[in-house]
Length: 278
Image (cartoon, rainbow, N blue to C red; front, side, top):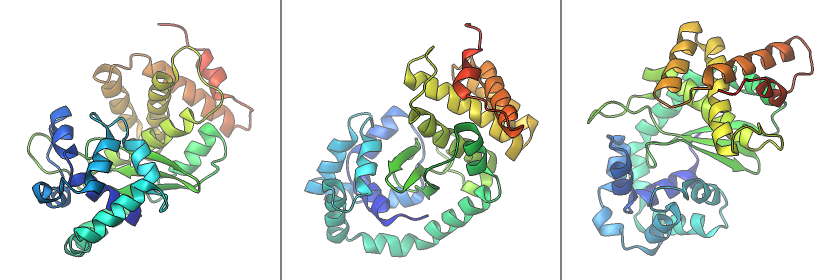
């Protein structure tokens, strides 16, 4: 889904100093649409709207989620600033020249996510979903992190294309289907768990959400891909991601979903509570 409000805000952010800060935090090659949006930065960076969104993002991006959540409300100062910049730039030229990229990205995402059963699986884990899950292919900025926005009528994931190594351009969504499915699941699971009133008391909420979302993803990949994909994801996240408890968390999620599938009244927090301390 190409959201015009998010796209305008992301292009406004591209004209700021954020791309340089993001690259300093984690070097990567942006999508060529992002590079085109950022190319006239020296011309636009003094625009008040650009400075407003740059300040809202924060030095290391701590404000990005709030920034883009506000951008979804047309009456918010962020959305109005982005609209002013879109008219001033004008961004309509950029959208016209890059329309094939956006259409291809949307088509690739639909192909990768269609029929994978993510919404049904997350409902099995967390209970009935109160809002639909929507994914926005973010070819702009930020390009190194996903953002899950809690809008009044939907959960909306801003998903950048899978990053490639070094100075290579990012992959198309369809070229890394396993990565796209994994990150989509992890991001939505993280948001859904963080929104729950009941939490796993062993860890602070932020750490618990990181662990649980990855445990959910292991089990989702087992269904959407295969056992090898699930094991590979678990190994990488456990060893290189620093989540040593992930195998136990994934096993707890597996017990929970198995009991739910059998019609039993399993509670996720009860299953997590059975995990022995490391």
